[in-house]
Amino acid sequence: MVMKYSYMYCLIFLALSLLTAFTPASSSNGLDGPFYDSTAYTECRAEAEKPLYNGGMLKDQKPSVSGRDSLTGIGARYTPTYILHNLTQNTIYCFSIWVKIEAGAASARVRARLRADNATLNCVGSVTAKHGCWSFLKGGFLLDSPCNQSILFFEVDSSIYAQFKRSDQNRRSKDCKFLIMQTSNDDSKIQLQVASASLQPFTQEQWRNIQDYFINTARKRAVTIHVSEENGESVEGAEVTVEQISKDFPIGSAISKTILGNIPYQEWFVKRFDATVFENELKWYATEPDQGKLNYTLADKMMNFVRANRIIARGHNIFWEDPKYNPNWVRNLSGEDLRSAVNRRIKSLMTRYRGEFVHWDVSNEMLHFDFYESRLGKNASYGFFAAAREIDSLATLFFNDFNVVETCSDEKSTVDEYIARVRELQRYDGIRMDGIGLEGHFTTPNVALMRAIIDKLATLQLPIWLTEIDISSSLDHRTQAIYLEQVLREGFSHPSVNGIMLWTALHPNGCYQMCLTDDKFRNLPAGDMVDQKLLEWKTREVKATTDDHGSFSFFGFLGEYRVGIVYQGKTVNSSFSLSQGPETKHVRLQI
Picture 1: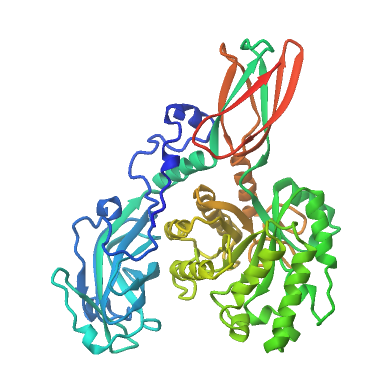
Picture 2 (picture 1 turned 180 degrees about the vertical axis):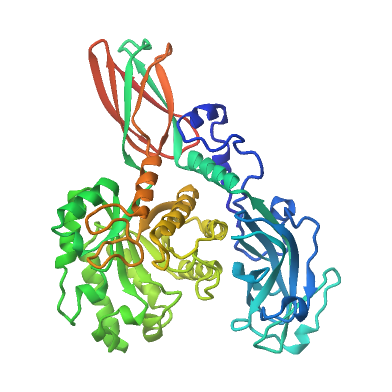
């Protein structure tokens, strides 16, 4: 399946001068240079497609088979490799390649790695390769320092591949040279083929310009306001004021019980955010710490805060597959006792808050943990989704997990593992899984990898949310702000991402990993950066005078608008919605 955004590429290029007039200048050379290719494939194909960017730096370069001497200590004896020369510092490199297992395994996880001088990037892309067909690996990397010569190589995760009979390993192809991989954990060899490799560099300026382009086409739209008299005559010289009153793209933050009764915290929060999620107060250990003793007091009070301030809220979570985050009494149940408790939990929670939460994380982190599935059967999670759908048919049901976009080194949550699990859910009778939840607990973001993974997830054509964004507390506040800005720009500029939630609930002793403010509600560097983005990604008040056709045009971020007209002592107030679309939105008003 291919995911392309062609409908965005044809957006009103004749009005590009207007667009740049209402957005921050990106660079003097505009979109000169290569344009990012969002193409992604998630189905195994009979033939490899042509390389992206016509191969880029790898055009016409064939892989070699390197021995132990040239790749000391990387873990694989034989591996297909590409020798890269003169990689530059802070350049973003986008990498893609097609991979096929010819013999030795039915499937295996193949990971691309980069050896640069004395450092090795553990994973710059991964794919679950299969026997007899081609799978698409897409990723990328950025180097902290220049490197005269690097080695891009591939490694098979021997813990997951299924061995064929020895006779199957003797098969040969007339057309292709085999690249034989031998892992350090197994004596058996996998015959791996690669094709259509591509490595495309982008400068920081080029990457930012591409992000701005996607923001301007996916998050904004042209508007023309027409003013006329009741007889239809155009009105020249009418004063028009346009103000954005809400945004189509939610950016929010987690809250906890600490916001209750804390007026300074409430005021600080409401000034900035239009979306939230309860950090812990809906989790089973919070609402039923002792069997049969339900307590929704805190969650109810927090919901009152949400309602009073017209905030949308995500429901997090119904179940958590990690055993340590389940009530002690639940961990001691099994069989029908556990099944009965689960049924009571979902009925109680979903009935109480039916229609209140726009999303529900149904079975949290089920790529990494299996508390319920190991006790109730592999299909237990399917039943959770079905029951949630039956009780609250309008909520979007999410599959939420970590280390999907943060890295490709976590073998439990690679993009292909995530996609495979979604497809399992979709194949199960009566199940509808509506949303992709990517937690996003980053240390050092790899923006090329992050975008590539979202490209592949976008082929599922489901809403994608970044649900728990933060930057590791192992970094200083200023570095957190720098990295957070990178993550937010990647999320906001990717056309398939529908919303972002920050995991920054404030507690007396700080936050989970990253705070936006101190306990006196003075912004930390990350808070200042968030405020800057919230202002940048909202249409500022527009004031103009209609021309001789009785109209004026502007580009605005998607959302709700209030418009006022003043002409010869007369005043008209109205409103309009600006939703995504390739055509100019026309708003006609009479005075």
